[in-house]
Length: 156
Length: 156
DNA sequence: ATTGAAAATAGGCACGT
DNA sequence: ACGTGCCTATTTTCAAT
Image 1 (spheres, each protein chain N blue to C red):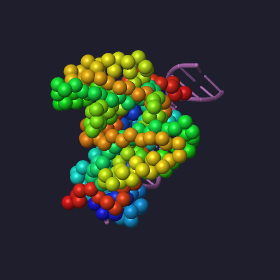
Image 2: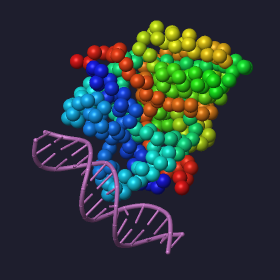
Image 3: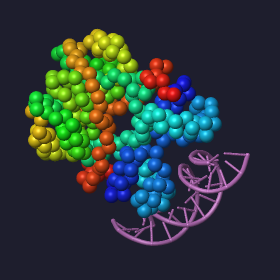
Image 4: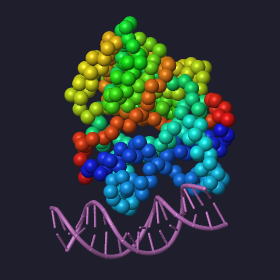
């Protein structure tokens, strides 16, 4: 994980479809060398995938909400997590240090869908309470933060 | 935005580097036709970009936190938003219906960086209070939700 | 359908350990 | 001598018109 790897990662985060040839030009190597590096970055779990970024409204998911989950004392977190995972409307799920021990980011087409989702969440064993906040607008989302010199693990 | 477009969108959300040739195989068209469709989806703002998905820990961003922002009555939201946007640690920013009218998702290398960030946030004119919650783990994030029949706007 | 470009693969050279 | 990282060269596949 040297400076060149970091540049490659930054370029691919900004545009995930950048060709190896183009990456090679940017970092001053040949395409096969870059390809080697990208393959290693993928194998080492630095790059875990590639996604097209889609405008949620354009695909009929106009409503975004954040939902906090408060469990009761009997809560089985394996069970809760499995049940949450099965709900496709939940795009992100964080386990938090707080009373609301999960926070979900969900997207649905209509308010009625959100209402149904909240009821389903409330029905999960171990869930004592939910708290929902509607997002009025998304200022920005998943903005790639350029990765600098400090690497985390020192990838072998 | 027909069934084929939706399939293409779903495939590209699952793997943003899928080639036009591969997409063509999957949807039963030729590569140029698929390319036309993808170009249109990009022009119409359905697909807004492509990103490599990176393990934050692997690039030295091991700490994720959610921060709620409570403004005071004098708050100038244009100003606040600009100031927030200038902070690269803020990966997402939602404007919410609630007392905490912004929620930020931030990533930093170390706790000390989070502390500094919180102080910087508190120093923004119009910010009365911040509330920070550390994420203990990310169960999943940005999971693409397969887009079905209901389209939002009816793209020309 | 045709041309040009890029990806994938194999083999070899140089460097540092 | 071995592992690593980069290059060249070739074939196949893909992109673009």
